[in-house]
Image 1 (tube, rainbow, N blue to C red):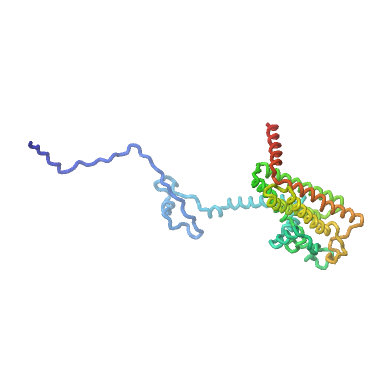
Image 2: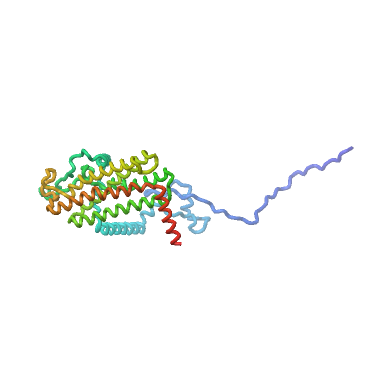
Length: 358
């Protein structure tokens, strides 16, 4: 079978025609912002200097310009004026708050009670838990630098320089630790409930509030008008949280998660209560019952002696506050350990409140 011959190929191939898009869509060119400009040089060696300076030849009027750098914003007169106005308003608000707070509490006096150091905190913790052999209990005083020759112008040393000086750092930290520890122990016993932390915090706050109100009433009855003495009493009232924390921890270990009941819990509670009562009795003696015959008290230092009748009343107040009041409050705080019965009671009260509100 004979095949037919093919035609020779053309000398030139036909031209190729690429498709032309009918609908042209323009995609905007994404550009990163230029680096910040220094004060000396107006431009960096940047690939955008040409476009920035060209004024937008292809992008329309002003399309290639960029916003000023952050340094230029700071140097702007309007920004500086706004900064000054904001600073003035902040200072005015701070001054207004200080004036209103100083009506009730002296900020400078509170700073004295938080002037502590790490060695002081460690020694104070040991003193509160083991106060039996500590001597002396009197606070140290120094003459004022403004008038050292004036024997009536004395001041107490801050807590970091005097272990017998009351502070508010340990009571505040013990208050917060007590709330967190009670919640943690409830969780370890499997009795955690959302109301545990709220119940514990509310109980602790009510105890502190009642004690402060009682101290305020006691200072009024005993004619104690010095604000520093009232702050001393408030500071001393917070040391009981340390004994409560020790009671909760040791009782939890000895009773194996059964709370603070039993002989172990009552034994630990009895020791911490007696240690706290003895500490308060010896410490508050120099606050409520100053004695100028004491060699450690300078003459005219402000710790004046009181009359015999007033001294008797203050002695009774000191005994009742150190033993009776502290026993009641420490017992209430040590019982707030997140027991299941207590949690059920709190949950039932919360449920009744929700149903009644609905």
